Amino acid sequence: MTMLPLIDCSQMLAIDAKTLRHWLRQANIPLHSHPTDARVKCLTMEQVQHLAVLHGRALQPHEAPTPSLLGAPLVPTDTRLALTQTPATQKETNLLGKLSLL
Image (cartoon, rainbow, N blue to C red; front, side, top):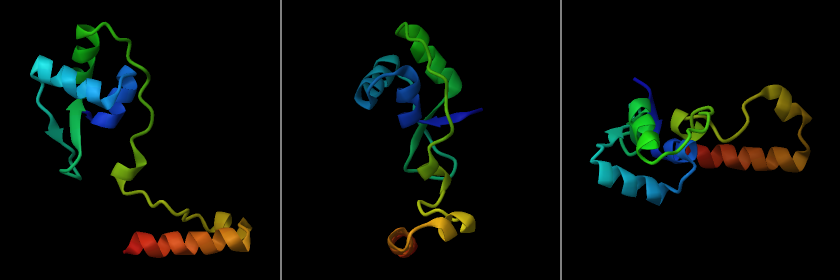
């Protein structure tokens, strides 16, 4: 069962997040918690397809999952990339790295 965060669902349906929540209330579709972050609410792919059929929407192709939900760092971790950066960019990267540790 594929769980999709609401932001991805609204992008797939090409609607605003507020509209998606309105449609969910109308259809009495329950939200599910994300497997790794309970603060993020999700829908199953079947629920998204059901909403698309109910409202006559074509689903946009689903891209990669939202990086922030996967715990991916916001700072590049590739050492080759860090070596080719300018000193100013490296300084910003170091600051971002320190901030992400907080």
